[in-house]
Image (cartoon, rainbow, N blue to C red; front, side):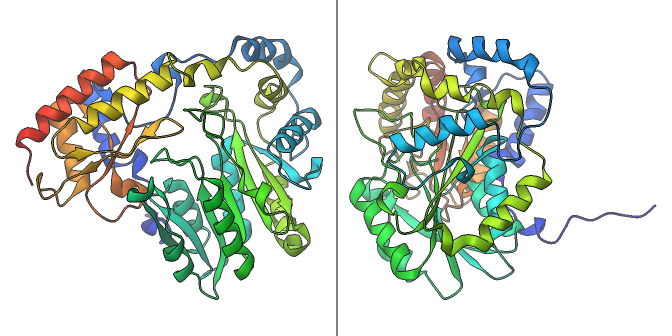
Length: 404
């Protein structure tokens, strides 16, 4: 029988958010072991529910969603997204500048396939959401990681970003609000990134899936609103803000100087047509989700679950000797640092695996987010406080004696 081998490009792809440690956790679960999961940003298993008005509208409309839509999406869906773009002050956006996808993940893959030829470079943050690096690599591009600075609230290091631009660089990716750090980039940082892209004629890709999950009275600013003269692609969706990750509905918005990207847009259109359309039932509730009372906002204010769980885990992590963490401003994630001089660790995947096997707590190691040092890990604070408390107690006990 013929043997089929993995593509050589796949050998270069890292996606440890769902990698070997998670595989081991699944084996343990199948054997009957209870695992405290702090590894994935899926709200549903933690008893977060979608807004009632969204579920009601979905039930009313699903029978009318049996056929294809336009490859970019339903007109009513794209109109609602266009109006949302206007609220975000994103300039020069029409109906045809909006594409819906089966989550933002699908659209990231399409964007990278349309953009990159072998050897083209793209700037991606470190730490990153690893799908960006994986998709760019599979498209034949060379990912160049610029550093986000923990000492500066995890904001991008602009000097590092600029020195990594070459004549092969085609675009800058930002993730704002950030996964895995929970950072929210201030306006002045975004303006400087836009100026950098302007001087080097680069496309800006801005992943803003958590833009409606901002806490502490902070404001999210879309970088596209600051760069009307540049070509920007802005991504968002409902998976996180409306607690419906399984619906798989996301979108991207093209704005600014579209004339400079005419060939690229033709490629996006071709790839969108090839997959026919994104799922129509999920598209049908976008108008309601963006236009009605947003009950999920109750989660991110004092007394709300996300807000209180964020506060708890931030304090609990910083109370553990050898661990420090920057307080997240948005999203579901915190990216704590291990003092590797105090707690000797040289392999963060082994650290995550040992924690899983000994204490039955599942986290993702920092290298899973293309962070080069073995001194960070990501915690998802979606579980209720009592579950987080149990996990933090187990982590603290583990670190008292753990050394590599």
